[in-house]
Structure formats: structure tokens, C-alpha cells
Amino acid sequence: MAGYVTRFAPSPTGPLHLGHAYSALVAWQRARDADGTALLRIEDLDRSRARPEWEARIFDDLRWLGLHWPVPVLRQSDRMQTYEAALDQLAAQGVIYPCRCTRADIRAALNAPQEGATGPDGMIYPGTCRDRSMADAGPEDAIRLNMRRAMRAPLHFTETGPNAGIHVFDPRHMIEEVGDVILSRRGMGAAYHLAVVVDDASQGVTEAVRGADLFDATPIHVLLGRLLGLPPVAYHHHALIRDPQGRRLAKRDDARALATFRAEGATPADIRRMVGL
Image (cartoon, rainbow, N blue to C red; front, side, top):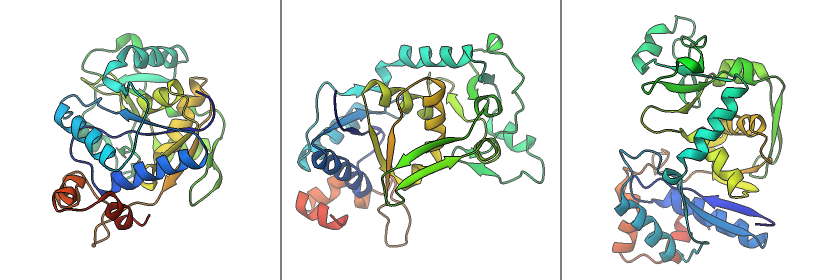
């Protein structure tokens, strides 16, 4: 698929809210402005929470907003073999390892100076299992990226959003402030960081449009793309839609679900005005 390509990638684990509408509308507008393509992708890795009815409502809400996309839609649950192949590629480079630690184990292992240190995935992993070999991996293990081995040189990415420019991250930042992130979770086969990078490359995405809350995850994705030899992606991190108290909207906030506004008689034009478009 030549030219500009972006995507909107919701998880079918709850209703779309105003924040989702804003992200989707921004993505489709950027695609129109570039005479490009906006794709819909269903990120349903968490099979314990994903529901067909939520997926059907995603389609319904987006069509109601006047958005259209190429079919068939990519679903992450159909791509486990692709993610496994990417993990095999990383294993061959010696940059991943199996981890059996629980959240409680990690919390207990953190010493006083580190306590409370968090990165894009929460508590920064202390490295308890870092010396384990992939040959020792079992079904109850998560798979982590060994950031010390993976970060051999600074990395950079192009930002096309409000902070347009080139962002550069050095190994020290990635090791100390990001840490050994999870690439495959127990019972899921792949985690968000790995799947989103592999899928963007497979779909020919040239610019990832997403919320500013994911900015800290972007260097992880740039690094994984480099390790896997994938084409670079530009990133547009848009502002977040917040509630009157300044909190980021969540799927549990049904009062701001698109279905609620629709039931109350709102139009797509009303939604655009609500999100500042």
C-alpha cells in the first residue's frame, strides 16, 4: 500500500468514548489531508476481556461517525504465529529472556532507592530472571526484552504532533527509566509492545496516530523495529480528551461513551464539537 498509511487500533474490551472518537477522527483527517489511507485494526490480544459485542459496537460507532476503512480488518488474535516468529528473531539475537516473576515478586525485589520507580509498563523490572536462557522458557513464563543487550546505540524517531521534531533516547535512559519490558505475557502469546510494532510493519503504516499518553512507549517500539529490521514509522501523539476534573477518559466512564451520547440524540457533528474539531 503506497503513500501515507495510518491506523486506529481499539481493543474490544468496552465502549468507545470521546477520547477514542477524537483519536479516530484525527487519524482519518490526517489520512484525508495526505490523500492516504486510514486502517482499522482490532487489538484483541487479551482474550479474557475481548468480546464480540464490543467489537461490533466499535464498527457501529465508527460508521456512525462517518468513517470507513479497507476490509478485511486485521485482528491480532489471528496473528500469533507472526508474533512467535518475531520472538524467535529476537531470541536469535540474544536480547530476550523468560521471566517467572509475579507483580508481588517484583515489588518485593525492589530495594529502597528503587522503590516506586516506574516506567511505561509500571514498576521497572529489577532483573531477577535476566540470566535465564530462552532454552529454559516454560508456558508460565513471560518473555522480557533485555534492555542492556538491546540498546547498543541511541535511537531516534520523528514526531509529527504538537512536539514536532526528532526525539533522541540514549541507552542510559532506556535501561534506567524504561527497563526490561514484557513482550509476551502468560496466556496471551504476545504483549502490546511487540504486536503493535509487528502489525504496523505488516500493514505498511507510515505514521502512527495515538494519544500523548503513549509517548513514553514509543522509544520501545522504535527499538523493537530496529531490532527486527522493520521500516521506520513517524509518530503523531495528539492531546488527550479529559473529564471536567482533568482525568484521562477510560472505558469504564460510560457517561462519556459514544453510545450514551447517541442515545441522548447527539449527532456526529455534536461529537466533533465536543472534542474540539
